[in-house]
Length: 308
Image 1: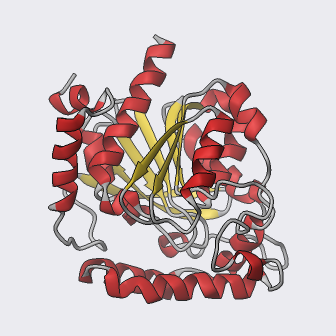
Image 2: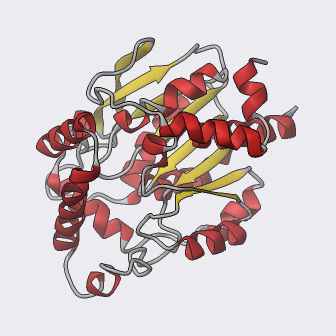
Image 3: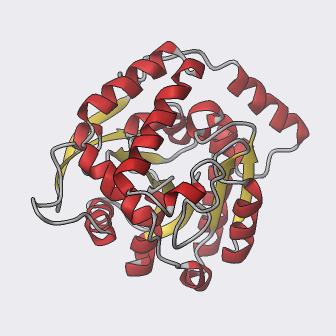
């Protein structure tokens, strides 16, 4: 076990937490459009089409799959992925169909995207490598991950929900600024508001991050974003299945995310998940990757001790 593994395999004590916070506070801007040294980019032939993917670490090590959400991409994990690889894991990620490098992958013309569409891609990706794998779903992708878990629990060693809406059904209802409006307007308009919100917050982002976000919007299919918003207004309730699965779960959220932390804590309790909160917004993988990596490795250690 490496020093990083030993450090992360337990909940950090006060000293560890302070050092991890210091590392996160000292993060420098990076070129988010360029994958870090030691990573490998590749294409994956999924049911929806060709998906852009990336891998970090040694493929003989235990496998981790990180799934980004709407308007996101595998680049969201270029800080987190190498940390998990350094902890002894083989880390993979791919852009969802319709998003950034996977923009050409799409539901056939005249057909709507549905959860099965995204789940089929995830299950194919998992089957293409070592299983069971540790899987993280970021934002909307958390719903995709839970559906895949219900369909094929044997493929999962653990599941982490990162910034995932905490309520099934109309998942925007807990959001203060868009919740009431989301009942009255179309998914297309809600998607426009979300894209506007991301763009409006770019003044708080580093230059490297701004360039990635702007480039992603140029490539990402607006149709796919609209359809994902529609799906988020009808999120399945899988809380009972998550509890019954017995698979170790983590709910990880930013304290300043648009979904209230009170709802996130309640959801974690309902599904029997460990709850972790970070002093950031919707993107702990970008802004507090060291703290998040420590909590993920602790989750993986719990899962691996169960199967030993």
